Image (tube, rainbow, N blue to C red; front, side, top):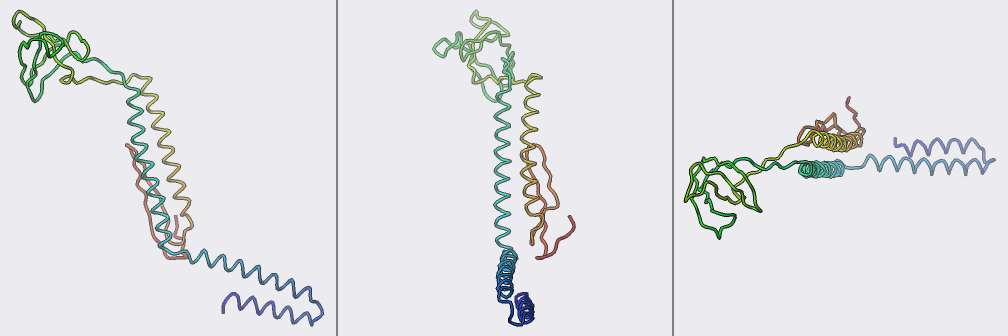
Length: 222
């Protein structure tokens, strides 16, 4: 027997008991019926939410979380760059190709020599994009030459203050991701089709969320 039929029978029995002497009571009972019907309709509408709709919404939530993680990774990398201290290199090691050594700081100056792979040169000065290097043996009477900066790999370091700032920045971003994941977990806590037992956050920022499916109306233990 449906809920509506049961309610109708109860209200009909109560209205008959009035023996026709209380119209207001019948009207109140009728209003009660309308309210109860409305509540039942609302519950039925919630129960009729399809599994496909639930999965689409969950997919949308997880996609948004994934985009947040990607953006966080990018922001951390960019923030680290702002906290780097650039150290000028002290030596040059040739790798992969020969490098031309010029007499002055420019390609318009005479070429002194070329330096082959695995050769190391000491850097003693800099002018614009050119580094002055010390030659092992004088060439054309020159004990120094110039090499363009495209062949120089600079060194970056973090000072203690920068490291503390970076740690604080990363911790804040991790907390943001954690809170977003917790909201998703809580959102599907009592869902009729899926639930999220837990998740794991690792570094560099990434989230692994465990998703389990259940039969409609069942609430497995968390």
